[in-house]
Length: 222
Image (cartoon, rainbow, N blue to C red; front, side, top):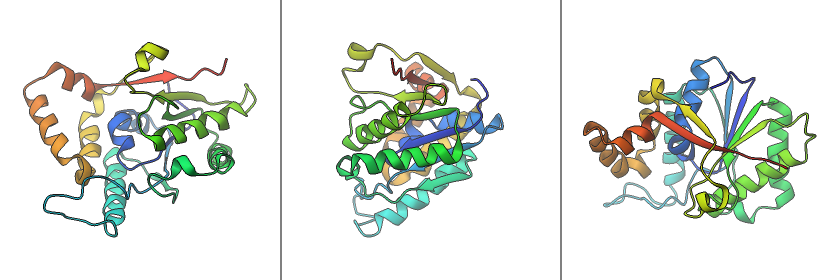
């Protein structure tokens, strides 16, 4: 991983950062690189309310806000921005409003690397809408001023449409921080993480690969 001037991560939901980039964020922070995470919503429409329920629609936002802060703490992240949009409505936000939100962050922070979702290949409508806004904001910049743009894609058609990821980050030095970020989002990940821990304890190759490596697509504007 190259040392960047500043890394800006933009995702719509709490736990998006933990699944895909918590190792990358933690590694950059350990390298002394400033990292900002702009989380667009509080994930208040998250599906897991517990059985029996531990939350309802009114209380879940505060639970997820605390979990998001705990995830940031686990990674050593100090610049966490909660942008105040509503979960599952990002796709309906005005396009220009979304592009301006991203452009304002870029203007303030002057990142050399921006990380978000690949529009159209990231499964959730809020993911795709976030990726579209990020891509369009960067597209409008002059080529000289554009930050590098790393994207995450995991739709079933990803490899067919854009091939395999071309950026691979070794995050084996921060595995405990990555697990800490994942476990921080317990309201949504507790059952998955229990299974993942069993697989890690059994030295499952796929689980170990997930823990130690993170993959990205470089977005090209050509």
